[in-house]
Image 1: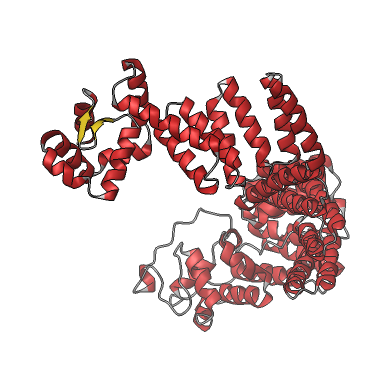
Image 2: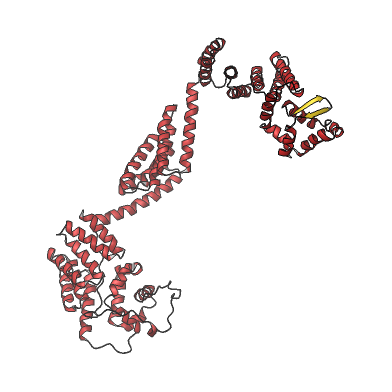
Length: 596
């Protein structure tokens, strides 16, 4: 589209990229060869590069296409003046003023042209002219001021134009304007010297004006100053768009202020108006969605978020903005969720948001949604009656020694009621029969956790530990159970079996293979490791081996005695008599080397 190329050309010209501006305007002309504004704009770009011959050709084409457009004669006069033809420039400006007598740009251009014509016929300036005045006489003056971002804005100010023209007429008048900060900036640009603020010194000092040596200027046909490039023609639609965007930003600020005050209805009105004024910014939509979310109008929030995502993708908006819209939608979906399946859409939305931008807040919301879904699933599945039915089916299968099938029913019972210690106890028994001792141990421990007074939990756990040949731990489990049920025969029998097995170990009545297995397991027990790494207990062990008399004194300490019993129960040491302890060799020397 020619309008797109034209807009790009305008932007390039405003940024001082005149070659790019010419290229874009040329593309637009190819698409719309009868549009006089395009030739006018390209003429201005050529003039800014001091290419006055082609600038003149474009200016003539502009006037040819639209003889009644005053600005075309302004371009024509500028090109003639740049080529040193002041008389032709005067004629062009006068023709333009006939069409638009109030045009300030044409008036200023005519004054420049007449001054140039007078100078071309007048005497040589006196010798006492200001040296700074010379820099205002070159034909590249206006191109330099247009190219510099600081002075470019001054060219829109009529008093500034008149000030420059006055200095061009009489260079000595520069002294009248040195107090104007704009003049200091102009001098800096023309001399390629960066100027500080008006109250500061210039970054580069020069003591005498005569010492300043401007770059030699190329020879031109005439020394007349270049006319001021006029601002490019901006379509009414573009002006209106800029005004709307500015007004939309004001509405957004007002909406934000209302939101902070919890005046949600007012905030919605401001954001809605901003959306109507400018549909190129999705932040207005996401902000309104935030208000709806705060008001509990979740459906409206979701609609706005969907609109923001759709529009954002069309505009190729910042991925963070799209992620924000998706996160806000996910939050609204979570608020609406009543059943576990309702969380699926919210979770999917949070995941999409994370693919756009991995934000910690979004990740936390995703984890919370997944956790809430799981908890709600458990609540929805909870049914104690069905759980009891499944447990009874498991019991029947257990009696028939169909242990895998029984495990399935016990597992279903726990899904229906995860707080029944009896089901954990029964499934632990099944795992024990199947030889899945670690799984059985977990179920037994869960059973005790749910009901610490339930004796079956201790008998299940103790039996599994006994089968794992952890006799000392099994003994502790049975003893703990007896605290809650002192007369429980299963627990008493468990204690007896553990003591018998520990005594057999002490008497050396087990095979070497079994002894090594017991010791290997004990050495991986953190409690046993802590005892063996305790400096006090290391000395006690050494005394039992080398100084039996001192060892007797150690046994009077209850803590030391408890730890010795722990080592005995774990098969680390053998106790022949109450007063004599014999260390298993070569384990003893290995332990002392390892932990000493």
